[in-house]
Structures are given as C-alpha cells and as structure tokens.
Image (tube, rainbow, N blue to C red; front, side, top):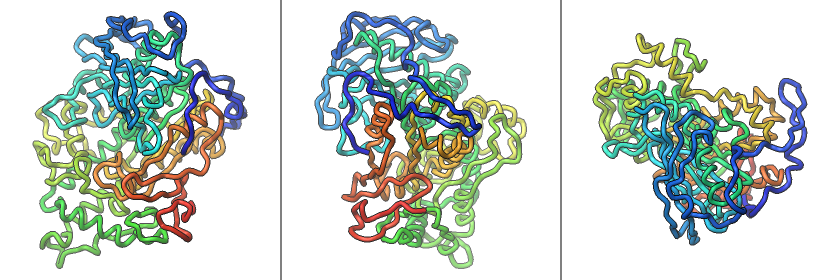
Length: 561
C-alpha cells in the first residue's frame, strides 16, 4: 500500500461513485458525499498556516457539537516543532475540554495538532483499553509503514480525545475503568458519544485556524480504537470519508464475558500455566504448524490449518512435574482459552458468545503486558495477572456492580444471576455494531480492516465474524466496493513485544487513493518492521503460501485459500 498523499482540495470522485448494488436488490447511485464538517463559517481567508494565537481562550458553543454538551473551551495553545518520524514538523498544539451535561461527569479532554503547510485533510485517532489519555497526535496509523511519514508529517491536522475521563496514575495504563460509575462518562466511552463530540469540537478549531473545512476527514484506530472506528462508520456514516480499523474490540461486552470466564478458569488450583509453560506451548504450536505455508520461518501463515493438540505436551500421569510439560489442569485451561465461549441466556445486543483466542494456532500467551500475565488471577486482582483479567476486574467493579470492592471472581459469566439484567443493558451500550454499514457505503465511505492472526488480546476470529456479518447484510460485491479485510499472519496485538511478524503496511496511502481518486487497493505488500522480509498482504480468507524463490520476498508467495 504505497503512494503519495494528495495536497490541497478534494480530487475527483468518479469511479467510486459508481452504482452500488445492495443485498436487498436496490440499486443506488450515490451522489457526492455530504460535507464532513458541520455548517460553521471559518474566519478570514483560507490558509495553510494556522492562526495559532487567535485560538487562545476560544469558546466552542454547544451548538457546534452534534450531541448534547455544555460547549467546550480551549485551555492551552502552543507552537511546537518536533521531529515526527524523522521529519521536522512545526505545528500549533491546542488543548481543550468539552463540558458534560451532567456536572458530576468528567470533561472530555481533547487535543488538536495544526501543522504549517496543511494538506487540507484531518485525521482522528482512536484510543486503547479503557482510554483515559489523549493519543499521541504525532503517531502513525496502526500497523503503519516504516518508509512513509505519519499523518502529521504528511501535514494532516490530527486530533483525538480521552473519551471522557482521565486515567488514574495508580492504575496500569489503559486499565482504569472507574469512570464507569457515571452514566454520561460510560456512554461517552462505551457507546462512542465522545467520538462525535470530539470530532465536532476539533473541526470547529480547524475551521477557526485555517479559515476553511478539511477536504477529507479520516479515522484510524486499533483495539478499542478499532472498535471506535467501526462505531463512527456505523453511527455517523457521513462524518468520516475513510476509516482504518485494526484489531477491533468491536463486541466489547462479549469479549469481556469471555475474559471473565477465562479469569475463573485460570484461577482454579493448578490451572494457570506460568511464563515458562506459556513459552513451551507457543513453541510447540509453532513447531507443529510453521511449515504449513511451505516454508519454516517461525510464522504460522495458515492458522486455519493449524490444529495443535496441547496433550502432546502432557506431563506423565497429568500431574504438574515442572516447566517442561503441561498438567491436565493446564491443558484444560489452554483448551478453554482457545475454544468458543457461549452463554446460555439472552442479552439485548443479541450476541451469544465469543469465538476464542488463537493460542493453539500461533498466538503467544507470554507477550509482556498484553498477555496472560505471570501469576494466576485472584480476588483482589494481582497487578501481575493478565491484561484481560485486569480488564474484567475493572468492568465488574465499575460497569457492572459499581462497587469498587466487589470480588471479580464472584461473578460467573455463565450464570450471572442477579446481574443478568445489568449485563443485558450494558450489551446494548457496548456492543452497538450491528454490521449494517449500508449507510456508510452509500455515503461513499471506505473501510480498511486489519487484524493479526497471532493476536493474544483481541481474537482475529471475532473480526472475521464481523466481516462475514457485513458481507451477509450487503452481499459480497457491494461489500468489496467499500471494504477490504486483511488477516496478517504472525502479527500480534499492536506489534507489542516481539511478534513473529511485526507487520507494517501503508494503509493510509491506500485509503487516500480509494477515497480521493476512486482507486481501490490492489496487490499490496506487508513488511516485517523487525526482520528484513516482506509478504503479500492477502485479503481474507486467503493466506500467503510460499511457491518458489527467496522466502524473505513477497514475490515468492501467493495468496491462497
């Protein structure tokens, strides 16, 4: 996915406005996409140099924001010159706060970076985990390339928010769920309300700074940010012309329930495999499945064909005899982690389960911070337990029971008892993605969806399920008219730690060409940012199989079923 970003006004919209045939049989000819900005005049003549000084103390009226707020105010303005991905960029940094309707709710903290030499485009970044901090506006999109500039260095105006609360320094990063006791804060985060509020307030400042609207507004995020990317495409289909969603936790409550079940499984006596056994399992899987793609490179490229049986690592008589084998209790735990989890009750979202994690097909439990930790989960929850277990702990305390002293092990996701009604209510808030993206497609929006096949925190199987739901609603042809989905073998969650394949692809340039020129993504290459090798970027459900030639060259592989 390589190309040069356009500078200046919106380019032609010809082929991309072609006939869109929906699954229901209706034939629609989309016209020009509605303006991505709310109606509000700029100040002065359009410019590519921001009027930074004039933004100090700016009040943003509530009328400029589509959802209810009490307006917003600029708290600080500064001119910065930073090296962004090796390129020196001068920009105006604006910090602002959006006031909630409920005085007891926290503000939404937001930040906008307004570069000199603006390219007439804007990029909103999504967050991660429970959010609580403003994402780095100098960062790249998820799985960004090593040989192309980040959005700010491309002279995008970039912006983001903290989703309506601030992370406590006493809690590990992105793991503070305490805001969930307030309904407005909960909806800002879980339903995505803060996304629209932040977008509208940010574009108000962009217009004030440059005297004109952006020609294009894009969104990019991974994990929680990937979920947010799908939320904005569904809830506000004309608000963003293009969206990059990576490893999205789109069915947030469904995954939380699965993590809660695994928390209980791993807390059983003798069930938790420690770090050495986690590594043992991963090596066993890779050793058994690495060569299924025709080359041994420590990457499981065909996870669908990998069916590792953890009993191959069983200790004699099933007892725990040390780090070189797995006990029966540990085999049961890793099997439960890798199988679908279903719950025997109805919830408002209509979801019925979560598809399990790929620990028996290439994912590594021992990834630092995002993995399954070094100690078993317990009540109270140890800081050394897995990320997902700590996420469940915060959800139980602040979203579900709203009791910060509640024991996370006292709630059984299979038999929630008195908590069922609350779980059902939360499902309607947290799992709002119904996969009907027809309005987004009709508005001319384009979506690039990416997920690593070795993701240890958000299952790629869940994203594949989402993609298949979209295709079921729209039909294969119309879906391909606005969406591309890629599963990246060997890539884990956010390239954290030492993944088998540290994926890097220029999805932003591909999205620009698709949205602005009507040129859909073609044959693309993904680079390993750590090792000197490339692979073809294969559209789901295909995967890269080695045919002949250099195993470090993408040209030696073909995408196959």
